[in-house]
Amino acid sequence: MSRLALLLAFIALLAAPAAAHAQIKPSVETAPLFDDEAGGDADADDPAVWINPKDRRGTLVIGTKKNAGLDVYDLGGRTLQSIPASPGRFNNVDVLSGVKLGGKTRDFVVASDRGLDRLRVFAIDADAALRGRPPLTDVTVANAPLVFSASPAEAQAQANAYGLAGLVDHGDGLIAVSRRSRTAVALYRLIDAGSGRVSYARVDGFTLPSTFRLPNGADWTPCEDPGDGPQVEGMTFDPARGLLFAAQEDVGLWVAKVGRTGFTTTPTLLEKVKEYGIPGTFDPETEECVAGADPGFGGKHVAADIEGLTLWQIPFVRDVLLVSSQGDSRYVAYGDGGLGRFLGDFTIDDAGTIDGVQHSDGAQVVAEPLPGFPLGLLVTHDGENTPDPDERASTNFKYTRLEKVAVALLLGAR
Image (tube, rainbow, N blue to C red; front, side, top):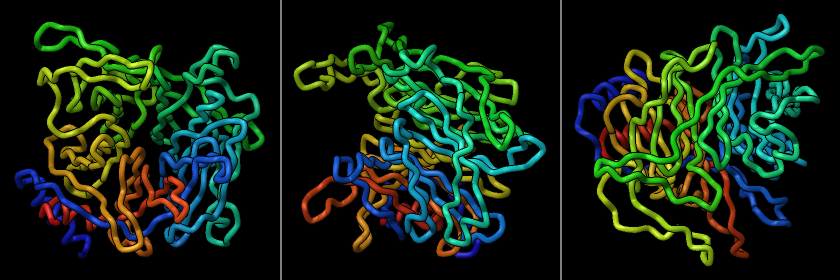
């Protein structure tokens, strides 16, 4: 399929009724990660993609693996570099290209360090990515500030930096960061710390509700572990329109207007999860929430948790927002860059020796021609990678050709 054919297909998609559930197959997977002592407590979570401006064969996929840090992969899924998080815990990651700091224009990878309540900033070396050398270098200033906590002692409680999304606006590197177990979202700006080092400073923030008034007049609070609130993790920016989309896991999809000076509108709830409004009671014995009767106030398309968000930018037509519906292992597509109607949904299923994707957290779409991916790439976290012969549970990342997603959404192919 040519890029013109893909464009025409999307014009048809945006005009057509919503497609039936579709099934597509991945093309590449990364090595399994094992969340046990033998595997170094490695648990895949969130991917980001950096396109090498010198040669796209040097394109990188960066994935967090929590206590074990992050891995850097090539387009074949091979591991190029492993960076430990110790003593931290990396949760989400994004790429910021073209940031102007200290009189230079640089590309960075930024990760949320949930363990220490900080951001970690890595400079990207384009030449190293092409020559087989480690492409990322930690350039975070030694005394980087805490993101949410008032002190290191407070950070020990782990209500720390969690979800993360990056935006470059006229050379400014902006990062939206959510707080684990809370409803807060903060906006930070990267700043030059001298000698090639990078720090960051808070710009603005907002707090989403934790209790909601239902149409029947009752107040509803999502059931969580004791002391926790309905947190946000998945986030993404729309750079063209200056929007931040934020997924409040047990509630739904929010949007807020944002610029270099901060948020300029109050967040608006665009889409509710199916479970919205269902009462729940926490059972301390099972450490699970017991759901009550469904009052029927939920949305139609996304099952909690609502997780990874990624914007599919399409030339000449409105973009498409892809949303991970973790509760039922689907991806849901919305038109008009997330502000429009439901376009369809799909699952990523087994493809020979490569298994499908279940309970996905983060996702990243890149609509640019890449080696092996002529019309672009969708990278997704797989929360249930096929176990090894010893039945050790594992996670990893899957790569899917973007034209498969386009055709699936257009045709509802099976």
